Length: 154
Image (cartoon, rainbow, N blue to C red):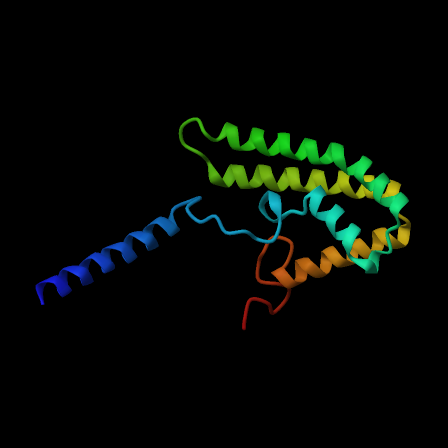
């Protein structure tokens, strides 16, 4: 009987500490569907365009896409390394870090769409934009919030 009580206490303490750790900033490392905190990375876009038949990307366009997206891939990796290395000294301001990442995502998205428009037709770019917007709606909006008017309920 005494061992059973002790085991129950150990389980309760473990569960309580897990909840406390999950509540800490940065304690949860779940993914919101894309690298860069929910943004779409160049390699994700390339993979989508290469393998999803609805975009009708030909081999010549794939080579052009690789050429225009490769520098953005490298730039994004460097940017993320800088963002995360700057927070390793002392106390990290997670709110500022999120804001900086949001700004960088926006800039990267603009660069990526400009680069894509050099390799794809206007129809293909519009199809990709529509696909990305649909993905945002399915995830609850561009910032992962509760949707539009009247949203947030079940």
